[in-house]
Image (cartoon, rainbow, N blue to C red):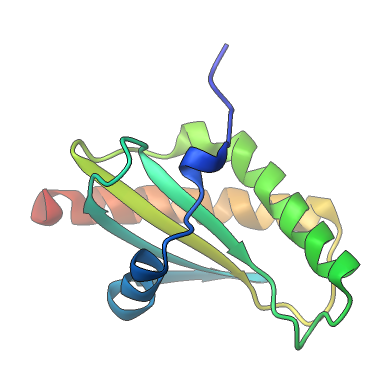
Length: 131
């Protein structure tokens, strides 16, 4: 049985890492998400650090924001085994919800699956130069 745990040791929380991700990170897009990613030297022993952002301006009610974040985290949790890792590196990931309306879980899951596929290809392309 694969390890599908997505605990606090895999959450992107450090302000310096988030700032670095926004400054130096690469981006991928598939509606309704923009994915920022950046391989960095291993900081936690985890293959990736993950975060979700849903804008308060678009979704003023916390209930709506939290639901979208919960659905995104669940979809990613089920897809995390698909990610290829880079030895000695941690991949910083931030999913930013850019849609104007809340979509159903099926649409969110489809988007996360597609972005995971794109991310896998991008990591393979950049791995030789980053390692």
